[in-house]
Length: 123
Image 1 (cartoon, rainbow, N blue to C red):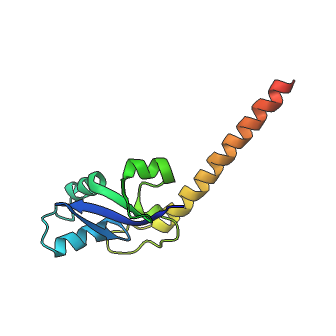
Image 2 (tube, rainbow, N blue to C red; image 1 turned 180 degrees about the vertical axis):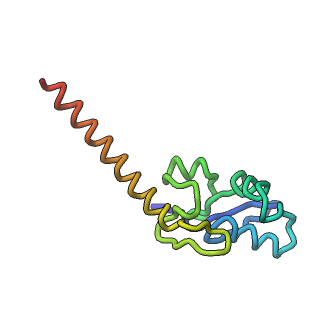
Image 3 (cartoon, one colour; image 1 turned 30 degrees about the vertical axis):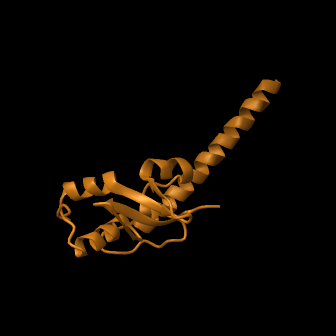
């Protein structure tokens, strides 16, 4: 079963990976790649547009595909990975817990809704 291993970003035909997309971008910057300044919306937009994920089978997938297949579109949500690095927003661990709890309640809601509809049909 494949899983998401790392955040990745492709710049100039080369793939850079890291525990989050910001770390991957910093690796590219150290190699001389031109990237938007860190302190602007252009940086965040670039990161969102170009962010990908590296899978355990070696394939790269876009954020949208990661959301469809794994329910993840941000590196902070990769299971078994603690957020780290300079670009992690405050409260990320709380966000991860909130996302997991929310997904659990959504799943529970679907299950209850399905059962209630079945019970109501029986009447």
